[in-house]
Length: 95
Image (cartoon, one colour):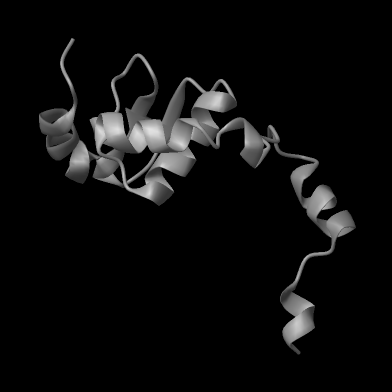
């Protein structure tokens, strides 16, 4: 049944309980998303993820998406797998 796969508010909270997490209201990142897109060439969905990580005071992000390498390390460190490492290093801003 289609409804069986949906999480209720209570079950969602139960799912998050054992995990470290931070709630980031969309209103708190609304203005930084276009800035990340314009300044670093991120796609909109990547800018939302980066803005959320930055707003949550994350020091790093683990991803296989090399587009995040466009961000300076001063904003967010990026961890990726070995197969994407050289591409990320080539894209990463210096300085």
